[in-house]
Image 1: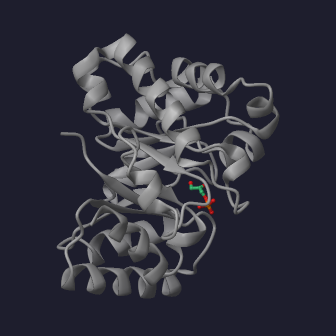
Image 2: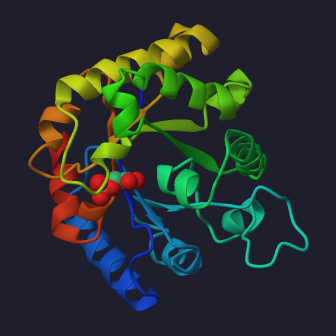
Length: 252
Ligand code: 13P
């Protein structure tokens, strides 16, 4: 059985103190009421060490939101996969559309980041998804397939076990405009078929594919009710414990 996952992506929000407060609140809520899914929080680099320590005996895993495409050396301001791993973080989010768009991360750069993350023992939440113009031109399948081919389909079957895919249509991110459960299911099923074509039916069946884009407590049950949607990657609604808990409860 593949894992059900609810992952938060805090993006560039929360000071260290605010992050500690949110993680503590979440930890207490989930200690009192065990979740029916894996729970991950993706946080800025500066939170990772503190939150990994704070959450080490909890059900919540910690993820970075990025890592460098170089191993180490003279890359001022960058944070390597080895450094992320050394904080106690288990995951890294790579390929987010905001990184692709604002920081010009190409498929080649992302491929290097994925390789370094896996080589350093991190699991990768790899994001793919089309823009509004691409959706209107019915290009969503081609875009998702190309993003997979460009950065993750070179991995070995063994490496693939540490990949989680997040389908995030760019037009749904932070817009309040969610893909319908039917639209999301259609592309999730297609993504799973692409994975099956490369890694086989069993590996595809064991791959968790998350939906991201204006996912909230009110629409999560319908989205997560679809056979190929294994959870969510949550932006805005991961910034307040009750909102995030509401989405986790969709797995009840
Ligand atoms: P929102 O949930 O704010 O739309 O963000 C989704 C996202 O980009 C998660 O990575």
